[in-house]
Image 1 (cartoon, rainbow, N blue to C red):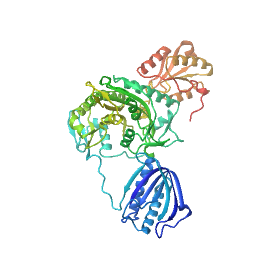
Image 2: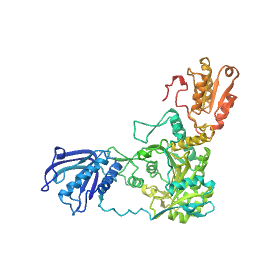
Image 3: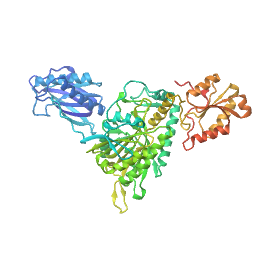
Image 4: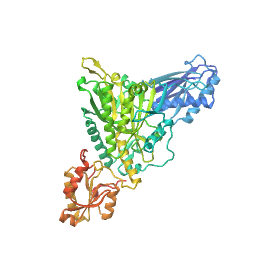
Length: 613
């Protein structure tokens, strides 16, 4: 069977006259038809085709896969005898086409239409003209030979800090290699965690206002007031961390839609594959899946010299990836998320490797600040492994433990090294957070150039990195850490700098509301997020509600506090402490030193807020 698949903005046909002696009987529905945003499947039934379920399912699966990738609203099956000289007899072609039509209808979640066989028909088709808009297929009843991958071999080794290389199947894991074993089981042996247990961090997400948006597509989140301040803090912090690498870093902003008709965009999108969001305006646009497009489009217009390199460019980019509905996970695997995407432009691969050592150290420094550690997966080309094994050994030595290396022999990627940094979560699953890669192809693709010491034009190597991971994944790491601590009998906490509310003042009665507000204003003026619980509730209820939100400091304000200035403060994870306002501010200063500050994202007084769901 030969197929020509056209993604059409519009398609219509109308029957004119008989083309064969016994055409398919016409009904009113088959005399004419039209559709918008449809995948038109021009179909030729060949002599050796049949209507076996396995064959028709293969054809239908291929068609529906393309329809899903181009986001067509319908499928239009159109008999077309011009794709092959070996045509099936008309009666058999009609039977096979009708069977294919029924198979498509049974499997599709979108409407499926058809045109009649054996008639001359006038038709109009408006092809959308993107990289996937014109595809052809030849599918035979025999099982096709397996398609070769773009590389000849894909295998894993474990590299120890002492330089020894091991086959994962024969590796003797020590007690200290427990996390590495989890990663090896998943990546090498494809052993997935069994069971449907919901991780505890999901409850914490909802507590702080990270939720699915039910009025949007799957995988899209909404962020309540507390979640919003956490996101804004991480936006600022990601730039702060990038600048701490000691190279010039420029923060930029841009659009999230790019023309697929642009050659560089189309080629890069083709490397990314089927997880693209494609939308339409006056032409076909792809929603970005990181900050690459915008930063590359911007820096190609800069006049760069070797003296300017290395330099970095950062955008916290709203990014879109078409994850499958069953794969989306709150705060972790999303269709739309915020990516603090840093690109570092360096002269050559040697300089990339030097900067990579600094980057590697910074990535570990940041995850260890929250009490976690990474286990690493290094994806490398065979050429890079052979020429730079010592570099990987050095990275393993700096980690202080063995690393898992996936070697792609014969690979033709735009990168030569791609590192995935995983934490092992509460349920003992690897969860990738941070990443970096050495890109040797996109500078030339996008026309990014610099002049070297001899005034020659050169293309830089580009380091792609998310030091913190995506914003949402960093939040996941924080909340998963709290879940592990709680499971181990500890009080779950957030670092004070990112706690949505850092202090809550609780007046013991309404007569102390004014004094409580005055105290809160002093705390707010010092740069900290503070609330006053002036609701008509008992003090014990107010304390319980504040503890539910993991507020680091809860100040109960009454007669003694008003007269003496000595505050009764509940310190999360510590207990009741007496201190003066100066000591409280000093503690807050110490615990937030080196981190960004943001104001509260809700009114200070709880009494004027509606109850949140």
